[in-house]
Length: 313
Image (cartoon, one colour):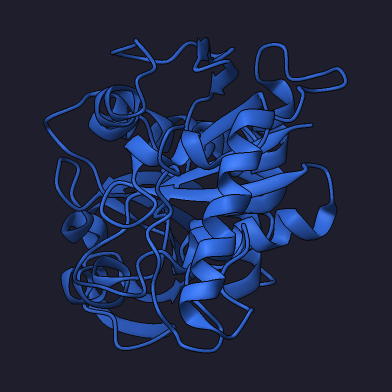
């Protein structure tokens, strides 16, 4: 039996922040490759400290649903989950035995090489006839001066696409570090420009900050008086919301050290305690439909339950 845990940031303020993680969890459940797929969050329930105790398997793969390496993937998640690891995660991931479970922690999905294909898919969606004769591509990252690893994957993807020769020019630009996105009119010369946000989800940055910094008015914006002449910008959806990310997640899970083989056993002590907990929850509601491993609130009474480990486990 094998469990897959997807770790997101979450938010106490924005109820939509976890939508992408929920969506990918459901897509992967439909594939039937794991016995269970569970979500965990830094700012929502189940919390990073709780989530491992909610898994029914002794073989658990944990994937950070982040677009790049950084403070959360290297420090916060390993610390809160008790992985005994701090700092950069090696390509093969980190494996630990925790509470009788073999836990494999991987790199964030955004650093997987196949994300280059997701960038290209987003570019072709917004401009199907993009050409190496007249079209530039901007891979747009967030960037931060606090962790040098955060921009590395943006540059790597830009380099791969540049080498493929599919665009006249390929630039890596950022919101919060140089070279900044506001410099694009001076940096980019091609008459047609595709911008692909290398972001995990649709949100304030992709809907407000980027359009404002670039002067965009919609999916397609004309700039007749730019330094290099008339330019037309095609603004794509962020890579993190593309359906192909589900395949990237599965690639990471299978590549995790020791991921192959028959998988682990059911953690029987946990399972018995968990079923007792569910029985109590259903009795408290009276509907008989409270809770499953995939639902975070009762479908009848809408009571939110915290998925903590049952007492004594």
